[in-house]
Image (cartoon, rainbow, N blue to C red):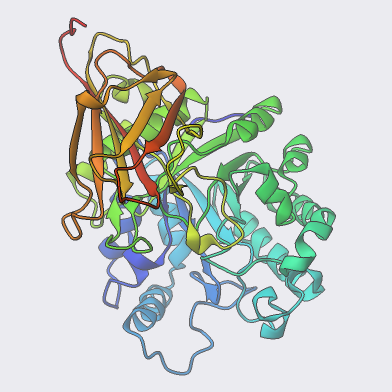
Length: 481
């Protein structure tokens, strides 16, 4: 049955067990829950595993760093002794969080990475050349841990995190074995679902990839899981890429889930930039950017929003954002800042399509390039005060004949305002800014078309469209167009 939720995820490490000094006070132990209490977050999700251990005293797997005689990194030491300080008081660190979530009227989801398991022969791991889930020991171990989470703890849900690979954990199978073992992985999800649901009322969820093709490539037949009722909810995402994507191609998944009355929770990744891009550092998305993505997802009819890794400690801005995420009406007429996702070079062969960066190798008036995007709401609404289109192009000079068309309407170059692309290397390219007072985008799908018609005498080579952004600003009073 579909269920509306607003979910916040804590990975147990970065903003929790790794940072507090042991022994852990109860006030510290409650922080992951308490910092989102009082916002629209009604469900707390907790990552109970890393590739080398669990963040609770499991009877099945090993605890994180349990296999180390000494801990030489401060965060490893803190993590072990923070958990141990609670255990020494007769408390289970996972139960402490579950109980606190319930006190704060939140549901609790335990999220387990599927390619991560400590305490098993490392030669079995797919990352080191082993067979992964083709080894019965690995297959059964993960089922046992999932059953433990679902039946021994008072959780409302257990999430099978497949999307943590690559980047967050190894895969469940070697690359050459994935596509040929779709049946094996479906049987695993089937058995996991049966075991987790031994305790009545516990939901089964799965983090999966944004496209059906990418899921099948990795052995995940999500359509069959949904049709057989093996999962109650799905969360599309790519862990390797922390960049917020307001145009994530999840229409197929929403349709498939809703056909069988299952839920889809859209993942709002936390970053605008990361360090993989030259001259850029990790930068969290602004509230306006989060609103833009949330609005697009609401219009796709998702059942709720799921986010994590907001700037920590969470302050007024972050708590305000979490409050807005619970109600699409709160952001309907609030400023929004859309930006298009770029390809994730770090994702290797497990990325999903992106239209940027767009390389135009040479000037050719007969060749144009299309960049589709979506925006929510009605841009023609008279409360919309301003719409600004921004395009960043490297190796562009002002005398280039660079044509920009929006939904078939050319944007006049005389209305374009230019500025340097970055302060670090201002010579590298230009931002082109167009005030869309007349040629406004439409609500829903839009098509931006660019063409490098001609370069000035003596200038060869091409340009690269690096970024595309749309800023939508609202006002309290109607604007006369």
